[in-house]
Length: 158
Image (cartoon, rainbow, N blue to C red; front, top):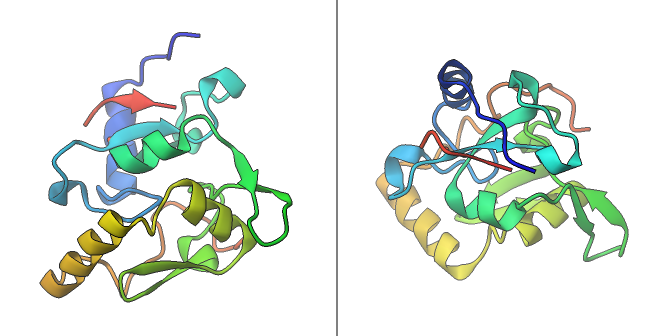
């Protein structure tokens, strides 16, 4: 299925809502070599729609690791578990930063950290550098545009 075009105004809204940070790993687009992508949280091939409530800003690494996945297998329980959903979930309900490490707090956090490889050695090294430079948002980790329950360039992917 061909991806539906995401209008410029909608891409702009997604970027602004996210504060130009990846909504999965919180990496600022200004600190990356590749532009962040507008991601269909639920891929179009799974019936995801191209509208504000179904799109997230994603860095290239998170977007490529996530692909069209909606769930993964929890490494602790073996249960099929939903991935973090930036429009429904609050980042701090599922994750916390412990230094440069993204620590999962929930089953959703565990599967997301594992699938998106958020604690891959290269990503840890990158976050350690950003912490030293004061460029990682350690005090304001609530992802913009989310509910309070725990429950990219202008390219689009998903």
